[in-house]
Amino acid sequence: MRYISTRDNTIQYSAAQAIAQGLARDGGLLTPFYIPKLPGKALEDMRDMAYQQRAVYIMKQFLEEFSVRELTDFANAAYGPDKFDSPAVAPVRTVDSNTHCLELWHGPTCAFKDMALQMLPHLLTASLVKTEEEKTVCILVATSGDTGKGALEGFKNVPRTRILVFYPKDGVSEVQELQMVTQEGSNVGVSAVVGNFDDAQTGVKRLFSDAALRQELADKGYFFSSANSINWGRVLPQIVYYISAYCDLLRDEKIAPGQTVNVCVPTGNFGNILAAYYAREMGLPIDQLICASNRNNVLTGFLREGVYDRNRTFYNTMSPSMDILISSNLERLLLALTQDTAEVAHYMNQLSETGKYQVGDRVKEKLQRRFKGYFCDDQETQRVIRAMFEANGYLIDTHTAVAFSALEQYRQETGDDTPAIVASTASPFKFCSSVLAALGETSAASGLDALDQLTARTGQPAPAPLAGLRDKKVRFTQVVEKEHMVDAVRSLLE
Ligand SMILES: *Cc1c(COP(=O)(O)O)cnc(C)c1O
Image 1: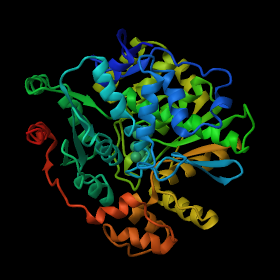
Image 2 (image 1 turned 135 degrees about the vertical axis):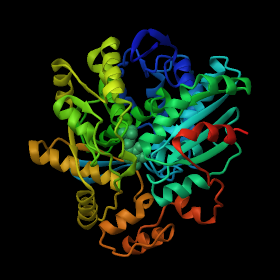
Image 3 (image 1 turned 120 degrees about the vertical axis):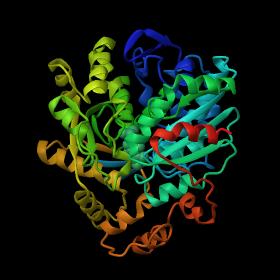
């Protein structure tokens, strides 16, 4: 299968090239030329498989150059019991008879980024071998919190890789920051950036396009790649868990074969919900995709009006991994809806020149048939956390709460009670102080003491990787202005 740039269909790569490069040379996103259909009885076949086997089955459809044997080794290493605290890997918890919560945070960093970032290093290092790349890959990551730690854990001590992570100094939770600055591994580097996530991401994009820096690093034997969700190797493993969740519901007889479901996803960069869209394109019976945003509701506006407008105030919210104004992966959806790389290039040009674009009526119609956008503020997020805990004894994090709010709004507005799968993207223990406040605790403890306080309040234990942070040493203390990120790269690669 060929992969093309979203902005130019004459730029074509193999899967291994696409994963090794991360981004097309024209700045577009490398995307499969077509989405393969699952064989007729695939869902039945996968019903009784383990998560790892389902992953191989699905990923193989997109990765012709990879053997089943290779993919099986990758899946077993990525999703093994030493990494995930649930044998189901991504278990589905039924909240009520037509609401099912897909828990994506049972991996080493307690957020859904692990689902892809435990797989990506395997795909990437194998891709480097397949493309005969001799240099060491230097992964640059801009993170709103969870990607950075996920990538650090995925790549730590992986031979022939270096990984540098930039996070916004005031845009991540205390636990998230501690997770990153205590990262172990001989090939890792972490730096804070003054500013918000978009500053960090723009800075990293600038590093990628800095020709002088690229040459300097090439002379030292490095080349840049990305672990951000623009890399196809990030999106692909995410398709798996939607199909897997459906198979679980079939297996447990909570839905009937062929029955339609809706999927609701708390969204930032649009990677996670895009994977659900691709699962649907492959043949998973999904009707509506409900896109949940926090107060940074640029996507809600886009889905309702067909106008993407990033010229708006940026808010720091209690769901920081969704504090994003440029949803990079939306570009791939635009390609799927237009089937026209020139049209996508046109929108992306407008976005970079004016911060805004408007899609045509045909695209808008297609968009609105499939996607529904809702958002909520922090107060509503807290209300949902509390209501969910009181009604069901189920503790959810701030991002997941935004999704449940969106689902509630959708159901109220439409009366549609189709079974819904809600993506739960982080452990509530990653966002202790917000969750504690939601539960009515007025004086939340700081730092890791908040983990104990949340356990005392709810009777639920903190996940081991978070409780274990207590014994870790801080290794990284650097803070840079965004103009000086290039110096940080040099010093971290020394
Ligand atoms: C990254 C992240 C999101 C947003 O996912 P996207 O793929 O960027 O849309 C939501 N919740 C959590 C906890 C995250 O870490």
